[in-house]
Image 1 (tube, rainbow, N blue to C red):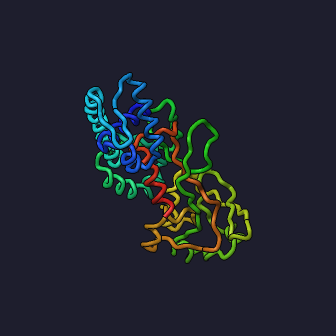
Image 2 (image 1 turned 180 degrees about the vertical axis):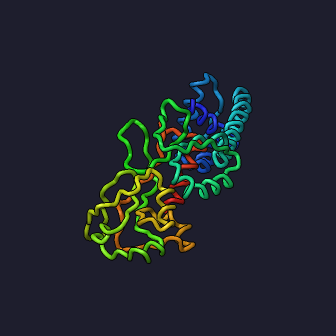
Image 3 (image 1 turned 135 degrees about the vertical axis):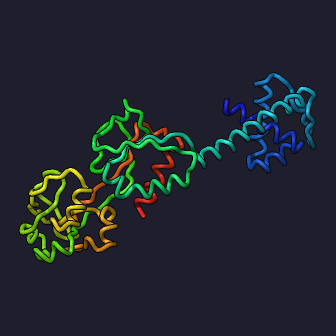
Length: 291
């Protein structure tokens, strides 16, 4: 069907030019190829559409009727293509996404606001939850996840890699002193996620495993950030998550040459064939998260 429509478009250009050579030059294709395609079209429709001479072509009566119909169809197809391009440029509909709670609230929120201003035709249905939603059985377009990608039939698109660094409040450091090397962290309260008993730190050349304190057992990055700003310990978090606290002075970096293991961020979808709203959202996040 696509080839037939393409041949109709070629026929329209030949009739407009009244010449195979001129039409071929305008289309950027060999004259012989164009002539062969029109010949095949005539066989398909079972009509003589053109009279060919050595100098020019003439449209037959049947060819003129066919030309008018072809031109209308080709014009409508081109208009539909232009409208599709406009629709893709300004996608619409409801974008249903599953987002990590803390990461969404602390970091993605301003990016989502920017995206919403860029695409006013998109409405949003966000589910902020710690659970891993089932993209196959639940009506989500995309899920943003942190950590290693699961081994499954889902499609994982890398968005960014967030590197955690060490931060503490001025009050905490004044009370307990500032660590200078990984071994010093054994004497400090380390605010880790869940029951991670060891922090693995890197400085580009060396790797150090540090026993992390477990006075607070937490499953919330937001709570870790808040407790650190309240002088309760040292946090190992991405800079993007503590940007406000760094700007206000509530937290400051310590041992800046050391950092934790980078955490990958993925967009997970059920299929590679994405509607425009989902594709634009993923592309936007990848661009902003990597700058």
